[in-house]
Length: 339
Image 1 (cartoon, one colour):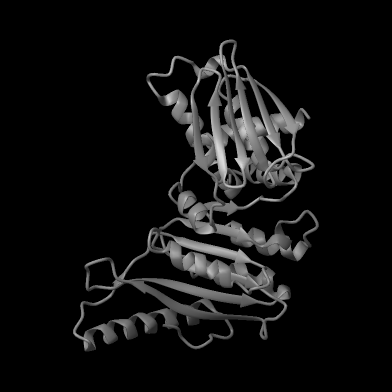
Image 2 (image 1 turned 180 degrees about the vertical axis):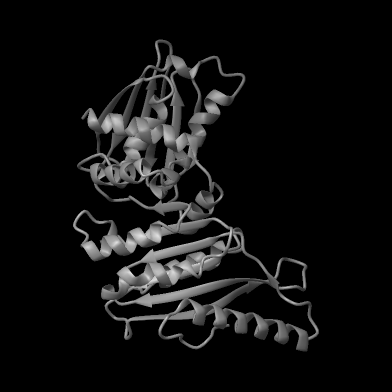
């Protein structure tokens, strides 16, 4: 269900529209003899994007995420195709849990802005975040994140960032030096930041962690003093430094990087060496990973590209600091500086 377009997109007009929307939903349920709708919100989730689809894909992902993470979803779409300066549309995303008659609904606000109005987005958002709840910014505004961003683009992004308790970006395909320097700058400003490129490493980290968490394993992780990380791109991408940082941070293991031919871009394989054992974990086809040990252990895993929904769902489950990422990131900075 949606309302008419709200123009200009002023906070008081948007909130008034939300009030009318909830009244309409309640009356509709009452007339049909159903329980009133349950309004759910645990955070404000803001997606800022300058993609050509005018925020459609971000909006779809937020709609899916609401079932696991009820939120007031706000999509900020910056587009040259926008007919007006800044306009808004409000929706209610509703669903019924299995076996229940009552609908659960979350609010979604879609704000479309022309690029020249992007610096004015911040004041509009101040009145729209849900009071006393976390504010998560999922930044997909590539132009504002670019080293060549204009002063206006940076100002608009900063205004939105200043409202957020957590900032999520995706450095997939980005230059590792620029990406890590940007995140380091934000971390130095005491911002809580996350990278979906780190989240993609869960499929690599879990099998390795399970080896050493197994009580029957006779090898201590501290004995693996040599680590080799292989990749297929011309230069190591951020995930290569993240996995190397995660593996070497606890005991200061030596790290080597190696370019190889493989099955797709990015991280290809990991080799851990101790005096008594070598463990190899690498992609062996487009959809398969193999974990092997010189002590005879071998296991295969599926390799599937994670969807944005899967990655965001995992990242939104950690609204506070992520100690594993913090340690890996700090070590990744050292490895990057040492190259």
